[in-house]
Image (cartoon, rainbow over all chains, first blue to last red; front, side, top):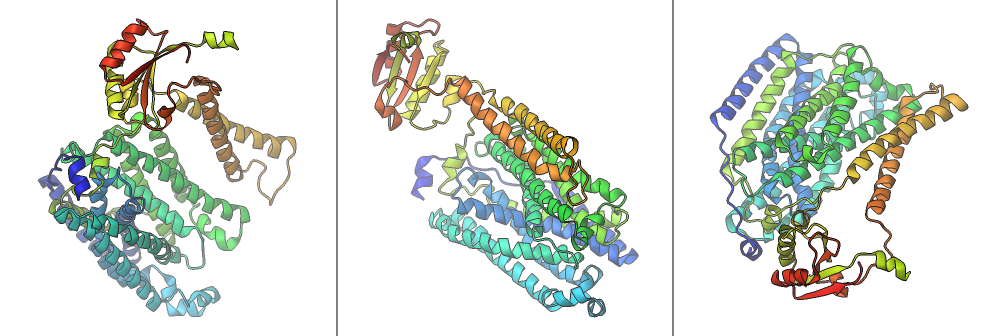
Length: 401
Length: 178
């Protein structure tokens, strides 16, 4: 407490106001999303649920990314990121909605996961062998445990930060360190299994031990892109004047560039081993993504999710130019959807990529709810954890040449 | 040896006990028209680059270009060894196997980029310097110095000493070489 108040008296952050435009965007998104998703369900259950799963994973990843990044800052006792930490924390406001979304996913899970059909399992030796893990009751138990843990940790870690806004006590910062260590350990295991359950089990015969890491890489990359957009938006509104500068953007962009490389590294590692070994039980995954236009999408991931963002983030000026960063972030966010779509949809149609209003519907629904929950959180709380003991370090953050 | 030392430039050094004062002084020295001066500090001091007016290094361009050279070398090396000079069928894969070449391409990119960056750093800093004069041993622990080189435009030892003193230097030293 003493530290934060003697070292400096930083500028007060502005109040995050979800303006009329923003409110219209999420209201229309949610409304349109519900209508289109309902229509898609009416038209084709299988397709609608595959679209739902893609959008669900996309926005849940962003929320989890916020919690993971917050925990990461506490574990490393990072000073530079304090002034943008509240925006990371705000993403966790979507987690309760994601938990409800998991229940909705269960309603449609029969249309997604063949291993949920006892008749299929009875006639399939491989699925019989995996039935101890891949069965509906255990799937539900896992979902409950994962979301239970994530919600408890987000409530605790974010809650401590909000409590500090009121009393300015440094003990909340200290308390968050062991909590964050525990969360990161829990997250490593739970998120790996979560991605295996929701995405890998779409093709229950197939397996990849790096699947969880690949999904995490996409999660972190897209989270950083979304964070940059929120930070730049708040900066342009003038709410972060004197608190967040292009030096913070510079470091966020370094993060984004680093994890763009990481994503490609993990994605290629998965591909290389399968390609080399050339075992039919493993190659089915890539063969299903090499038909017709799927091949083009597979290559677009390499080029537009790795090569182009990497080169666009390479120069120093690029990392310090807000408009440029937003452009790259939008590209990364689009490609993250393409990536998840690429993981999900060959299960629905291995011959032709499908993307139309049916998929846009569930994307808008989830996206609108995400935007609503996050902006609602931000307008209720201070935009910067202004009484954090490391606030001075972050306010004076400076990136050397 | 003695002749070599004479070739090196001397100058005047001022010593501060506070890093912030040293940054302020560095800015003033630059504003006084000096270009060929440097700050010697025990740790990186925020804002010092801007205060002295140090331009960005060109090393990143060396890194980038040599990275591309490394990438191309990786392709060329494997193309030559695996497909041209001694083609061997490995696991029924084509001789020119893109995915199999990627790890080597990646490693050579890193190797070329990293080693060239270090080499460029050594070249432009004229490292290794085995006999730099010791201005003050405490510059590695708690003191901060600004050194104005005698080949700077408008250099005058007396004037420099006065300038540094007026900027709050607790001590000034004339050095015959640096």
